[in-house]
Structures are given as structure tokens and as C-alpha cells.
Image (cartoon, rainbow, N blue to C red; front, side, top):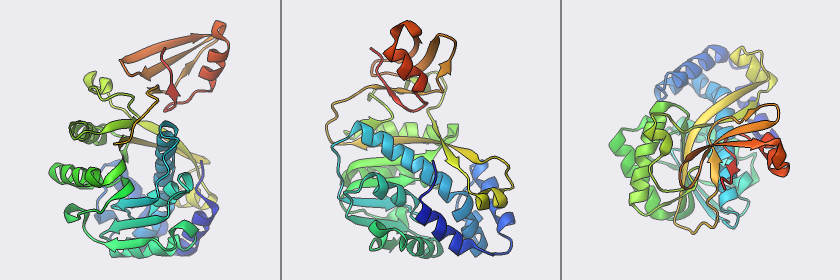
Length: 318
């Protein structure tokens, strides 16, 4: 996956020739890896620009993956309004308007005035976001209006547990579809697991990745549910991060909760498929259990599908 060309150009235009951006990028990446990403790493203009270069593309890739997988479960869902809580520079909205072209009204809430300003500037390169409504507010005390799609991405980990619970409950009350996205770490998953229980208690149906509302079977066995998206690095991205590879893998966890009916409750592949000579092994979170499935070459069409299957894809366990 790669970010849209217009977003890449807009980021490069803002960050071009800024001294110290490589050092700032290292600070941002280090804070993210440690799970200590709050407002501190973005305390200077250079750190914010570095964030655009090294974190915005990865966040975009995760958000686009989540929206696509959710869309597969809700093919008839055509949201007209979008609310992004804790929007940063608007990363999730870039992915959302690409996957949901029906969106006509966009609102973004962000407390950091400089990130908000940068996001507004980037949005001028995206036709569906040019007239978005940017609101300067602290989401910890924000009361949202009704929207078809509400997104909270890479934000809940910056809040205290009670603050996250209040925000998610408030968001769920006004959304037809609520999507939460966080880094793919055990700590972030633990927070997500608690919020999943809260949403189910409040009447939500899990659209993705879960095919059920039972207790998470990965949580029961002491594991954590997360996924990965491979992002194509630009030459500038490689230069700033000092990397030699032409890609990086962004790991994340997510929940898509809806109050709309779902016709399809197929399982989800929760680990990389293991491809052997003549058979493929899949680990699938199915509606009734966590299953290890072996697909042999004798099954022909199913075997061909299994060889093409990827971590995070839907899979029928029957």
C-alpha cells in the first residue's frame, strides 16, 4: 500500500528543506515504539513535520486497511457524514473519503492548534476534505453530534482509562458505525478488549474484525488480536528514517462496532497463513470458536483461495 500521490506531495511541500527533521523523526519513532506517544514528541514545529513524514503514512495505511475490511462486512453502508475524534492532521479522514465516496460532510476534532493548522493545509489537496469542519477542542470533554461514521484512531492510548470509556460511550451514542484503531501492542489490545466489552454491553454488534460478540478467544488464551499492513516507503521516507528497505509493516488493532444489521458473520484469519507443500494452515477466529484449519491441495478451489489468503482476511470456517 502507498499513500495517495496528492497527500505525498502535500507532505513533501511542507517538510522540504527543514533542518533537524531527521533527528526529530527519530524522536517521534522512539516515542511511538515505547508506547509513550502523547503531545510531548510533537512539541516543536520540526517534530510535527517529522510526524507527517514518518507516522502519517503508516497511520493512513492502518486506517485504510480497517475501513476496507469493515466495508467488506457492510457493503451496503454508504455514510454521508464522518466525525474524526482526535484527528491529528486528518490522517484517518484521507483514508475514509477514499473508501467511502458517499461522504459529504466531514468534521475533525483536534486540540493541538498546530496539528490542526497543518491538517487544514494538507486537506486543500483532497477535494472531499477541502470544506471539512475543523474544531479545536479537547476530546476528553467533547460532546459529539450524530454522524453516520465516527472514527477514533491512534488516540485512546493517550487518555486515561476512564476518559477513553467516556469518549467511546459518547461516540457510540451518535454513530451508526464506530471505528476504533490503536497500535498493535498487547497494551493497546488490553484497552481495546475492555472497550469491546463496554460496547457490547451498550448494544453494539461487532462488524470487524470479530465475527461474534462472545468473549475474545485470543484474550482468553493470553494472546492479543492485531493485524499488519505493509506500507511502501518513499525515497524521502527512507532518507529521514535512515532505512534501507523499501517498505515497513504497521501493526495495529481495531474494532468496528455498528447498530446496523449484518448478514455475513464469516471468520477472520488472525495470524499469517502457513503455506506448506500441498497444504495451508490457517488460524481463524470463527463465530463459534478459535480454529486451526488445514486446507489440502485435494480441495482445489479452496486450496487456491487459501494460498492467496492473508492475515486479516475473512474466511469461512465451515
